[in-house]
Image 1 (cartoon, rainbow, N blue to C red):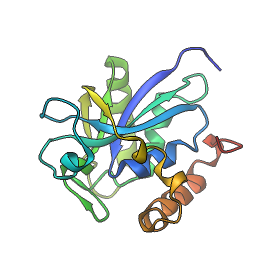
Image 2 (image 1 turned 45 degrees about the vertical axis):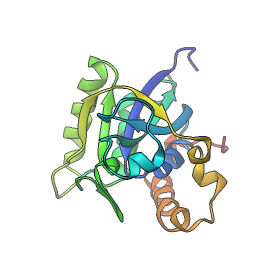
Image 3 (image 1 turned 135 degrees about the horizontal axis):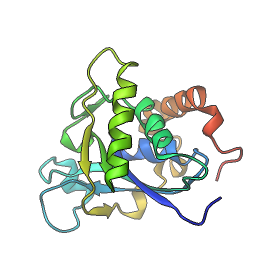
Image 4 (image 1 turned 30 degrees about the vertical axis):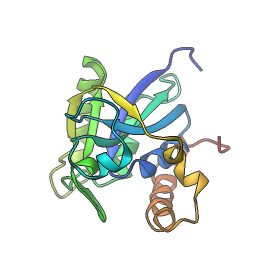
Length: 182
């Protein structure tokens, strides 16, 4: 493991789903659910973001060890555990706050993300609509939204939406997963 962690900020629908996926991935040091990309100044609340009026997306900011997992592999996992072809929607979650988005933190991340988006298009019949934008202010969600799936695995949304995503992750990316849950 290196001493230098990198940051990735991604959104693919409800942040509970993205958070749950990346908590299982080897090399991920932390996953923080929150909001980014809005036009309203200041720290938005969950209710404000859910209204769709702030312009923020539900995102997860990851700290990862690039000596263990590359940024490109983080994005490949992201792109295969949500539907990047639906505009402002993931399943029953509808609105701009649920958009598929990659917020890049530097030019190298932008270039890598563009290549991964192009590479992944071959796996989808419909065009990928994932937004690729420079990172802007990130606002962490409240503690009750952090690590939600592991705290509430039997909650309806978790059982019907997140558990199938985790099953897909395990099927498609088993070689990238932690050998023991952290």
